[in-house]
Image (cartoon, rainbow, N blue to C red):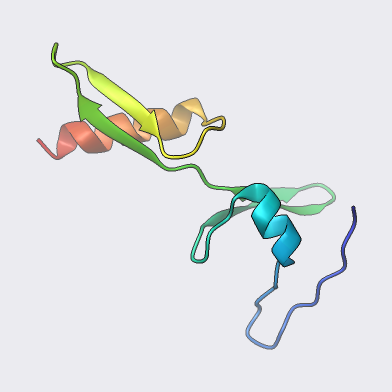
Length: 84
């Protein structure tokens, strides 16, 4: 489904409620703006929590069941390691 949205004076765009619900995007949820040759793409950000298992190895838990990039998982692991 294609939907036309407008940009307001502050640069904001309203994503229709049906699409926010379909994406599981809560109020205050983050989207990434990805430049493409055709324009821009909005992608939902994925939040991961890193904890240490009983064996001391890092465990990555996704707060939403979806894909997460290797870069995001590695960044979460590095953040957890730096917090020690």
